[in-house]
Length: 412
Image (tube, rainbow, N blue to C red; front, side, top):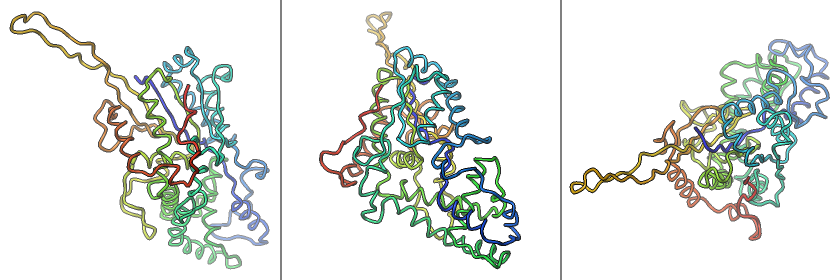
């Protein structure tokens, strides 16, 4: 049974209505055309949510995939799984949670807290909102906002690198779709950006309404290409394919490793709520899914990096600290006194188990403990070696000497 749980949770089912989606909708609705073929539904289609400009960056509150429902349900699920830790936290007044300062992230944390602690959760727990500002240096939940060289793409391999690589891949499959749609509708031409936006609308409308006619516009192969475009984007934006990714993720890895070593005295529960772009660097720091660089000319036959499995909407990573009784060490004074047997008190063996979206994942080369867990000493050594092989956050990111060097707020 776990005696400690640390968790990184992605914003639950949020809805980012991009300007691209609204622009495409406006263009379609004012085209003065009768659409044919795969786009015939557009003749009666309306944008999938009312008053979108006032609901930007908000959590979805309707439909079977509502973000509010997902966050609350996850709270209930984890309460069921770790109820013994919940009561320990309440008994010792150790009930803080942390969220980055985004409306949808904070809303996710609040709905989760209602499911985990109960509807009157504010009488029990304290939610700490961590600003997403550049001045925090390493003392942040969102290193992608504080790593200045990354934000400013100072060397061409920062935040925009993922978009560049994804653009290379998108150029291999989107033109054929645009051509097909133009053959069916010769009086309108769509750019690659607009075709990609159509694919995005399928997902967002499905979240908001449960289904979307845009999903039927594309073939299975074209959806596989879209999936791979998302994989390339995140792999090179903040994952293993980005030179800043692992260093940014090392901040949370180090802070959590310190908590795991401190054990129950540090507190039984730690929940942090962030964006998907802040979870992916942590996976890169762990080197959890080693793979060859993702090509942008074709989809490799086998790949371990799949964004849909790593950071789906509402995705989460849970670290469990397992304390297991170890057999005692005994000895006797045989042969002189064979009946005199002495045993030393047996310390517990401690392990760390990694759970990604409800699936236990083996840490490569460190999964020999119960339930595919990793011994705490091996986990700590792995984090130390990773840190030694990466450049310091402040140095890599171009921060001043006075910038904070580590996460300091993650404590009960």
